[in-house]
Image (cartoon, rainbow, N blue to C red):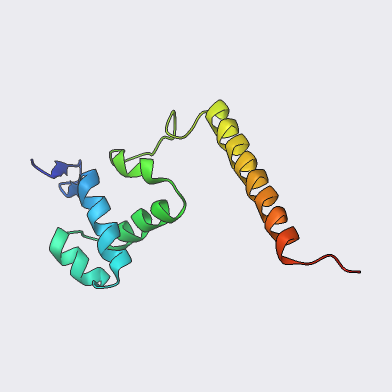
Length: 114
């Protein structure tokens, strides 16, 4: 697969497949590679590219790694409002269940004061 695309000014733009982006993130997270080493291994022109991918990873925007270069759209990328609400409801249900179990354990551990 050719990973270069031409531009009007005669320079070439790099296109990095999602797999490469994920590998770069894993290399960076491992702490075993410097930006310069990662750039050399994957022939990345600018370290700001690595910073951008890391930012997307940290901010939970991993779907952006699959998007092609250029203007990034988030249309239909994240969860729908209904899915978000379902996720929140599940979170609070689990939280309430855990708090109930915690209170029960606390009652068993701490003897009533007389």
